[in-house]
Length: 298
Image (cartoon, rainbow, N blue to C red):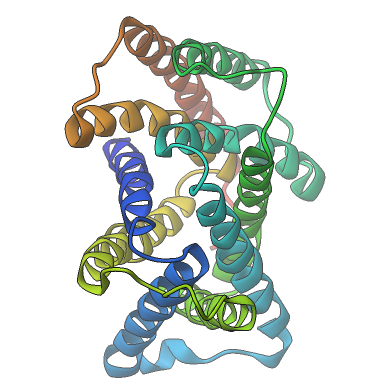
């Protein structure tokens, strides 16, 4: 459980650094530069230290390309475009819808049903998010274009983890999956950027400031977060891991205080209490079902 808390603390920090990176560069250029760099680093590591992990069966190529598209290209291009128009904390809140999308996808793709206690945990989790939403001045009656595009990014990212888990079950390493998808997704973002850019608008306004924040994103998100998430997928269900995403907006509020000096209001503490209780219910049920499940073939 401590690793899951660390996981979502890292995720919350990436929204802040992503917002900073957009102060110095165009969004699709950020994705192209960031993902190509991260993918090259991961694949480079495999070339020098685990060359055998680079093998890719032709029959699995389409799944790898799907991961590159949904996990990297669509999810991040849509997210970073949206971040131009909404705050990092609101983006964090919208990403907290991931558990419900993952639960729905689990039901349709894996026929995975939720127990009554897990459903109760989700309901309490929703209630836990509401105080922060209200304190942020969210208008529940209307979504902006940027918020809709960000929702598309959330759905895309949620779906991608099912293909990632499929590749992991086929024996591919996390570094191979992430390295390939990030590099291919990054190249696709670069192609999109240079095909649609306005030559009069510079790619970056301050390269070294841009590079500083992109480097932080690569280390915290591309290297640590995604590989840690994949490692945790071997121990927990997708539904449970995404449900723990409720922690991300809570950390997001804290990051706002730490990096921007924003005050933490009482709705934060109400949300923290409710979400902690919801996580406790969900976690207990996850462990219970895991223990009760019959052992599979070794």
